[in-house]
Structure formats: C-alpha cells, structure tokens
Length: 385
Image (cartoon, rainbow, N blue to C red; front, side, top):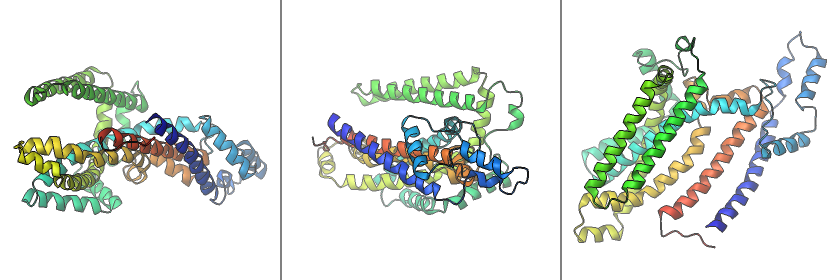
C-alpha cells in the first residue's frame, strides 16, 4: 500500500503540472489583458498603462510568465491580483473558501445521509407505491435544468412567499455594529461543525465494540444526544450566536436547493447498488440460514452497497467546491465559484489560476482517497505491489 501511494503521489505531481500548463495557456489565450480595461479612460495616459503592464509582469514573454507562475504555485506563492492589486491571491481565496465550504458541504452531507437511507429503503421495498413515488420524484429532480430550478426556488420561496431573503449571505443592518467579521463567524461555524463531526465519528468508533445491537443503539443515541446538546449550548452562550443565526438563515434556501438535486442522484445510485447487492449469493445464503430481514438489509446488503456511494461522495467534494459558479451567481453568494467567475470576467489571471489550481489539486487528492477507500472498504480489492 505504501508503495502504491508513493506511485500515485508521483503521478499526481506530474498531472498537476500538466493541469497548470493547460489552464495557464487557455486563460492567456483570451484577447487582451487587465490593462485593456483602462484603454477608454482619458485620465490614464498610455505611459501609465505600460507601467501597469510592467509592474504586473505582462510585458514579459508568455513562456517566462508561465515558468514564473508554475514556480510560484509550487512554492505556495499565488502572486497578487490584477484586479485588486496589490492584494495577494491567497488572501482573496481564503476569504471566499469558508463561504463555499459552509454552503456546499452542508448540502452534500445532508443529501448523502438522507439519500443513502432513502435509496436503501426503496430498493428493499421494490414494486411498492413508496418506491414508485420516490423514483418519480428523484428522476425529476435529477434531470431538471438546475439554473431554472434554482431561480424557481428563489422566486417562489423568496419573492412570492417571502420566507427567505433574495440572495446575499447576511443582512448588513444586523452586522453594522458587529465586533466580528463575516469570516470570523464563518470560521467558528466551520470549526464547531468539524468538532461535532469528530465527536460523532468517535461515538461510532467506540460503540462499534459493543456486540449486542440494542445496547449499542442505546449507547449511540445517548452519546449523539449529548453531542447535539453540547453544540446547542455552545452556540446559545456564544456572543457570535446572532450573527451565526443570520448566516444560517440566508443559507437555508441555497442549501435546500442543492440538497434536493444531490439527494436525487444519491438515491438513484444507492438504489441501483442495493439491487445489485441483493442478487448476490451471500444474501440468499443469509436468508436460508434464517438471518432476520433487517440484519440482511442493514449489515449485509447496505454495507456492500455503500462502496460506490462512498466513492461518489469523495469524488464529489472537488466538484462541489468548483461547481458553485451557477449557485453562487443565482443566490449572490460570495464564495469561491463567484470569485472565479469574476476573475475570469475581469481577466484577473492570477486569481483565476489560483482558484482553478486549488480545485484541480483537490480533485487529485479526492481520487487518491477514493483509491485507498476501495481497498479499505472492500476486502476483495488488494493493491498489487
């Protein structure tokens, strides 16, 4: 396994350089540069424009710009923004990233948790009204044109009913005298969510050693309830609670829209995987031995059907981070996707390349994690040395 991971890391490094090369020359193939925005301004003489191009390194040959960029990325120096000069690219991306993580990871986790349970249920109750109703709804949501669906959700729940705000991620009036910045509150919300996830994982890890099913379930419910109560109490006494509530309120509509679409895909994937698993010989053997149906469903079929779902979850993380352009544009959510779109529109090459480099790196890491998970979750898979 160590040898396999070493080879994959070497392949990832070479592929990442190829990825940067393609992106750099594609983005630079756009006509003009950042200085072209000032051509029509009579207050800026041509000499000032040339000084700007020289300061940004745009007067150098394209190949030297490429070498400098690759060197800077490999040394974790993403340069300075053209459009927000001299603001560092890393500062811009780090400001937008927590917003995207909060929005999309919440929707992804909810959709995978609910979608897996729903797909498991409808596969087990095949040819029933529950399955037919769920499948029709899932297929509609899975095939819907997402931009239209997002605009429809925003119009109906935000404009028509007035239940949720129309875009943005906070109410400026509530933040006028706030002692905290939006990023500080975002980071605290992400940190508390990470702590809660670690505690939940610890609960399942330690209770897994309890052999009897009923005592194990009671212990898990008790410990999970304590974790939930602890999180609620923490935010009730926190001075950031009112600002976190404002952010959470603005997040409900985009998270719900994303969750519905992701949920449909996971439900269909889980159902298909479960149906294939239920046809395996060991399922018939378990039934012949008199194993209870619930045990067959949850411990035999569902666990083996979880492999493609888990792999899909890992691989979707990179797509989630980079695929937020449509969602963040419609809901006016200032995250990484909207930052990338604005950078490409303004020909801000360093910011665009920095965002795409991060997304590409995350995709490569996700594929490596998926390969490792295949070997860990399925004992039939072994890595050849």
